[in-house]
Picture (cartoon, rainbow, N blue to C red):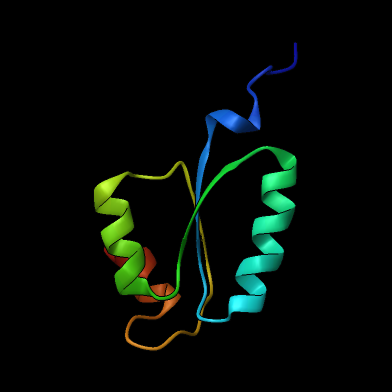
Length: 75
């Protein structure tokens, strides 16, 4: 039996210091029905996570201030 969970039930946090990548991923995921939050770096992402924990985290690996790896370790 297939799971009937709708993408709209999931919150996704996108983290990238490249605005073009954020726009592209946001467009794809919002068309699929996911609820999105964006952050431009790891520190902004940590603040967003503390405010409302996402179901999924999609992060760039190399960013200023806090890398994607450091963000994943902190989470």
